[in-house]
Image (cartoon, rainbow, N blue to C red; front, side, top):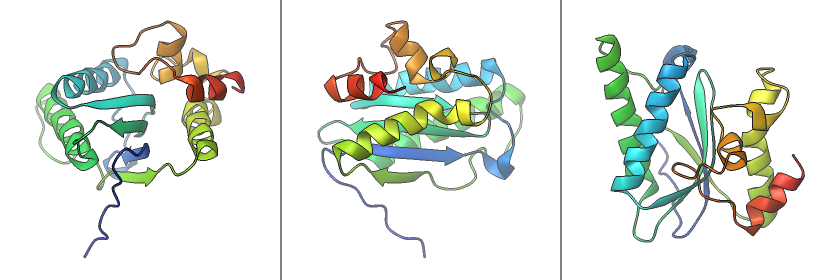
Length: 166
């Protein structure tokens, strides 16, 4: 029996989801764009703020805050299942895209919010994909730097503080 997911009204969450078998499903730009389009569609269907994200080749990180009356599990289930259906249709295949349930951690303090924001931004740097987080086209920092706010939210004061240390 799996553990229940802890949810808290008004909380920010660090969400991760891994690709099945560790495959590099998200390696291509086309597939990364497919995921971003799925998130855009989710924002039309559900109320949530995406404060940060990064799409790695075999996993994703999101810093997300569900809107009032919204449920993180329903939002993530929709995003992950719709993406999987689009991916399978694109390649004319069947089967699981995601390895397991998504993982989520409630952000419990301002310091944890800043640390999580930085961690997500620096994921492609740590993986030696790029030298600077703002250079990564599939992370929120690139969108913030280019003032594109259709997926990620404009940075509030707490996020601007995290940006100063990157």
